[in-house]
Image (cartoon, rainbow, N blue to C red):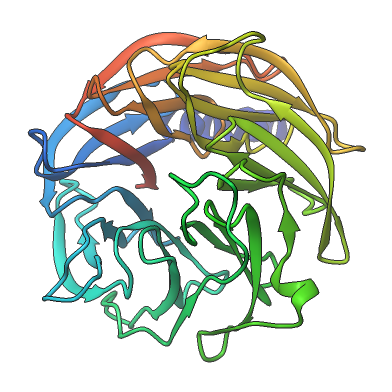
Length: 383
């Protein structure tokens, strides 16, 4: 009995030691516009337990890497190059990088045309075999195969968003693809188009990387109120609800998913009551628990916090906190849901907030990184 007890105690000690040694370490990459002092993508080490950041400096020099995505293995990172000209064409580009997980440095593998001007968003399909890109000024979306060595192949599909434009003549003069993600089962691709006041839906052949239009009811997946200008989208963990953040009126429209046909059930503002200044909403993200939703406000310079009702999908406003800088654009919640890090573009700082697991509320931790014109944050797990 005593021998067995000692074995159990020893096993618990080993397990405890293993847990103590296994801190959650990540590489954090920051994309920045390169017209105001930055040169490209910057790297940091990030410890999710302490929230501490270690500056690794410039990871890769590349033009206007305004949105980033890393593969699930943490071996490759992909960046849009948000430009209006690429090799003489009216297009931006996409650059593939390999990741040195020890140093954080990035090595460029290749670069391809994005097939549209000002690419602003990039994501993987659910298989990880294709990247999907939204071109804002071009009003197009495209799919690109990921090769075995991490390089990108030429586009397997390019589609131009179509539909009636919104009433804002300055911002909605044409289609403006702003966000693109694959559906949970990889059968469809959703596109938030700011110019069309819609979240469009394309059929997706994941075996060939081909996008196509279905019937009109499928193509126009979710319609927002005129002039709202959808920018980015988040989903509930069970896929029953979609949350579309509108840049132009700083609102979140909640849609219920009825067999992949979406109906609006709520519209809620992300701004203080009576706000009369200029504001452009920017980012939306769900905490991994699915209980809380966050959005950023450029103008009010704040992060809005909402509680999510699991049954109805509706949102309840919880709080609004200063972003710690000017013009908060993108933010990222670390994979464990412990911290939210927001990139304030005009002040060039990345400010960290702790997330209360019970209330979802944010508290500035005092941890700050400096990157001129910072606009995107992404985490890559490392051993």
